[in-house]
Length: 191
Image (cartoon, rainbow, N blue to C red; front, side, top):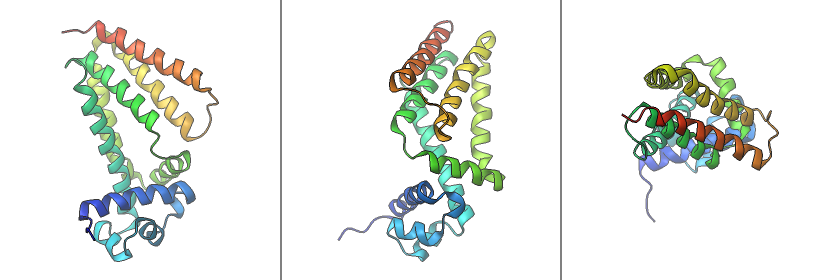
């Protein structure tokens, strides 16, 4: 039998926390349920996450790390200037939406948990500040670029709270339009 490394166990625990949150919500997530879902002992879970709050923070950090990694990969595909960053951001968002790593219940419950535990939002807040600073480098196109990225936020939250009743072709048309808008803005910043 091959033993899983500690990092594999940590990943399984984070994936299990999302699965449990998708079923019962982050507020009702228990360490016992996550340990069972991950196939680890409660002691094994506590080795990686000493409390439920630290587990929730770990899930948020894991999500942010994945988003940063997706963006970094996308940035390698586009020119290294502010317009290229915008295109990379749109590409990464599109990829993330297509992947749909977890359902709306998990997203809703983590948003609710963040309201009750504000420190869960520290990393996303820092990320958003850096993102806006990078968009500001587009100068007079800052507002248009920000609107493109805010539209992706709207799609994300619309999906998370099941408020948007878009057909697959309508959703695709919106995303295509945002991608075209980002490409047009990027073309103005080729150097």
